[in-house]
Length: 343
Ligand SMILES: NC(=O)c1ccc[n+]([C@@H]2O[C@H](COP(=O)([O-])OP(=O)(O)OC[C@H]3O[C@@H](n4cnc5c(N)ncnc54)[C@H](OP(=O)(O)O)[C@@H]3O)[C@@H](O)[C@H]2O)c1
Image (cartoon, rainbow, N blue to C red; front, side, top):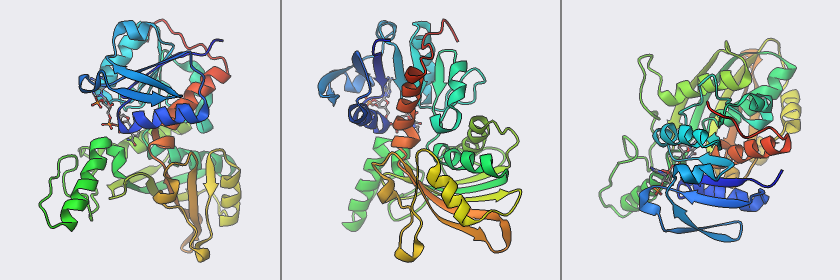
């Protein structure tokens, strides 16, 4: 098969720019690359794969000329543009939450459920940036000893909310240290020197959308519709790299040593677990890495069936752009047809 024509919608954003880096680093095969963003960015140039490309409008004609369209521009834009791209017989890999729970749309982390890709009807969704590392850990463990309960508390960096949120953290930090007033626009409160237990809107059940995304997406990806799982999602003043405290209960006692062995052998996971030498995952170490980092693996003295651990992951890479590119690589590697008439 000839290398695909690809388009990246949202190429100027936090995720979009990492797409460009990863395509270049991995030598992702392309016949042509088109970059799109909002009207604000049309005419700007960006570099990818040693080429300088002008940002343009995402039009039906552009989709018609594409084989793969990556969309990282927000749910509203995805809801509008993805059906147009599919209508033009382009294959869409969507980073937003717009289609994740649609039964006709596979939601895929290639290390976990790549077999779902062949079921696509034109769109494949990539999960939330905290869901991806969580399911990558749950899957290999559950394959060895069944899991009965998962509790996760996230510590999510500001880049998870986009490039303007990164700027807001930097601006607030500078203004506070210079004793100047601050603006809180991207977050409901000041994020510099603070943490905010609130990501996306609150639902009637008291959880946030972000928390319920983690629950529902994990169940779908893992094919465990009844998995007992609870999440608390918290925004922290870190630029790049989401972390999670994860507590997993199994049907039987399992030693931290075996957990380390299973995770070390699992694809995409690096175990960093030597607390006495101050070695454990931190977002500063996970940033710019493809692997998710796992450590602080310990057995609950009050419940030998429960293991606690700490994860850090680059939310813009495995949590977003890398996962989407791996989906495309897997489709190409397995020769799964990209074309689908209509969703
Ligand atoms: N950040 C993460 O860690 C992460 C992780 C997983 C999933 N996601 C998802 O990825 C998507 C992008 O997130 P982000 O963090 O990259 O946001 P961002 O930094 O705010 O970037 C948004 C991008 O969308 C573009 N855009 C806005 N309106 C558009 C339109 N009408 N047509 C085409 N492009 C348009 C923007 O272009 P301009 O520059 O011209 O405004 C920009 O390139 C979201 O759906 C988000 O939920 C993000």
